[in-house]
Amino acid sequence: MSEPLLHPKLGLRPAVGPRVPSSIFELSRPGTGGQKILPGDDSVLDDIPEAMRRKEPADLPEINESQVIRHFIKLSRLNYAIDTGFFPLGSCTMKYNPKFNEWAARLPGFAKLHPLAPDSTAQGTLQMLWELEQMLCEISGFEAITFHPAAGAHGELTGILMIKAYHISRGDLERVEVIVPDSSHGTNPATATMAGFTAVEIPSDDRGGVDIKALRATLSPRTAAIMLTNPSTLGLFEDQVDELLEAVHEAGALAYMDGANLNAVMGYFKPGEAGFDVMHINTHKTFSTPHGGGGPGAGPVGVGDKLLPFLPSPRILRDENGNFRLETQDERPSAIGRMRSFQGSTSVLLRAFAYIRAHGRELQQVSEDAVLNANYLKALVRHVYEIPFPRHCKHEFVASGTEMKKRTGVRTLDIAKRLLDYGFHPPTIYFPLSVDEALLMEPTETESRETLEVFADALIAIAQEAYEDPDLVRAAPHSTPVRRLDDAEAARHPDLRWRPAKGDDAPC
Image (cartoon, rainbow, N blue to C red; front, top):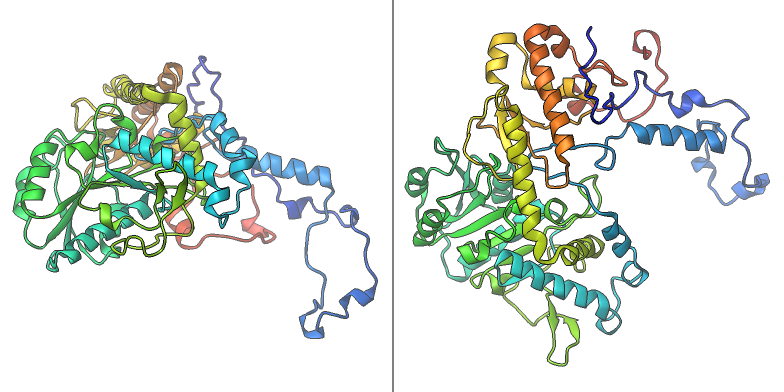
């Protein structure tokens, strides 16, 4: 097996070592745990019913404190994080989050405020959220913003439920379909279905945009809305958006924009002013708040005048005397109600507030850098990987390994696994579904030119390996703690607890 062609610019090395670390149970030795809490006498068990007492002691590892700390630090170093490396995940916008925003979110006046505090003692937080709404309205071109949704997909559901309430309020009960282009985010059809609509897919044209003829043929009195990701998951801006919106509105439907890719167009395109009726914003993709991991999130939703009456309640209002308050329960009967508790994830929104205030009108530069980085990376690899849609991309682009697969048998999955040996997290693969053997790459605006060049060198080196030694690539990864796993088996039957490994199951 040949070694990876490591690049000298960044001193690139495989991200992890060759062995699986010992489990904490394997490190356990009887009598080494130590006692930090004095044991009680047997009388402490008297209040526990006999039937609920253990017959045998809990099988817990015995290990001293320094070993515990070192064990979990070693495990943490196996995690790949944006603070340690480049995430070229297309459609996800995994960019570096400035630590200043974390400091702002931890300020005691915000972090320690009780969520049930009366308006009179929550003026600082209410003012911050009210000002954030004004800033997001300016950026997006919408009339108002709700902060209730807990994430982007939750924001989609909020927007579609408002569209449903709009049609019901007009007595237009036959509108039961939502049009979803094949280049949209995968959550869009799921959202439409969850809201009680039927998702109807329409194809892209040969330039990667929405097929306007197919759209017009699909629009009908049954159409409630279109859900459009713009720029799309192909990394392309819908340059026929005026014609598209005109056709949708002529049919009596509304236009939902998936704003997950707003990072690419800030300062250049305002969806609300363009004619979209509603849009969610992924704060973790555009405004530097934590991404994924199952923690708190935020997916603010902006609306135009048609949907303004249906925004979730309560909204944050500013009275004539300058004080801030929450809407009362019966103040706006047309509201669709609450989408979650309180006012959303305030600490997440505070990070977005700090990010926007720090950049000010330079937010336009964020988009310019994101677009420049994507086009630069595309230019570096286009002579090795196919680019199905070669026109100018926005923040991300799709490459394809179809020709490589035909000639060498090396698949996109193999390329992704081999990238692990070069110390890189792989890009998104096999998405969007409309591109065979797809690699969807998004460098974001926070990566340096040097990082992009090293990543491109790795992709080019892997392509060279595929033609010269395809078995090397198909067997990758070679330097990670475990070799290639059965992804389908792992997803269907995850192993969630430790058991002593015996015989053939013992780690190498």
